[in-house]
Amino acid sequence: MIQLELKVKDVYALKESLKVAHEVTYSDLSFFQNEAIRSFTKNITSDSPIVLIYPNLKEDLIICLNIFKTSRTWHWLKEDFKNAVNDFIYILKN
Image 1 (cartoon, helix red, strand yellow):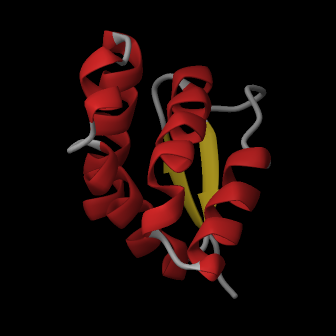
Image 2 (cartoon, helix red, strand yellow; image 1 turned 60 degrees about the vertical axis):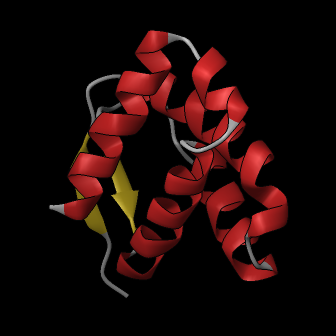
């Protein structure tokens, strides 16, 4: 399966915010979505601004992050983490 290369601004903020988003939305996602997001987040390294993603994971991440943005936790999140999430959603949709 082909992987897409996505360039992100702040890899550390993205990884940490995805961990939080996944914890918050865990019960709203299917088993397969949870496993895919957990595996993806685990494999993000701060060595490179390039994140590799499978096309079928894009929709799962968008669902996860959109649910997360409606949570109370979103309002308490650091601004740089919010920016990382918003930038990542933008990259995923384009």
